[in-house]
Image (cartoon, rainbow, N blue to C red):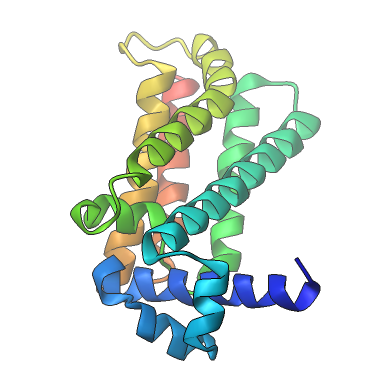
Length: 203
């Protein structure tokens, strides 16, 4: 694909993502996407066979970016500390900083949009979301597993429990941030989770 063609494709996906976050999948009509992207209907269908095909490509791109960001953050944390607990805390601190940098570009999350409006989206997306969830947990699991034994806590807590809590905070706060028009909410809640986790792991 030419550079201009690739730019048009990315422009369509960017417009669609913003509309889905703001209006839901049903509210992001092809006509509205075309209008926001400033393209013709022919250009849209040149790049995407259907709205469902666009949604699949959009979530695939989102997942790739999300996992790449997590891998980079985990790698940075590993270089910064050999201590298992500190590594997890650094990961969360870096995540919060990343969210700080996203505030000016909005506070929507495609995963939160999918979870909140699942029936609107094509059913084909579900295996893609489940696959992302497994990969996300698999990336973080070794860090959490290594950190838990360092905490002398009698609570029956697992790495999966703590990672699941992290995901709940992420997706839940993005929904609330949208409703409350509060772009700082996700990073604030993540820092609160980090503080609570530090107490738990160092108990």
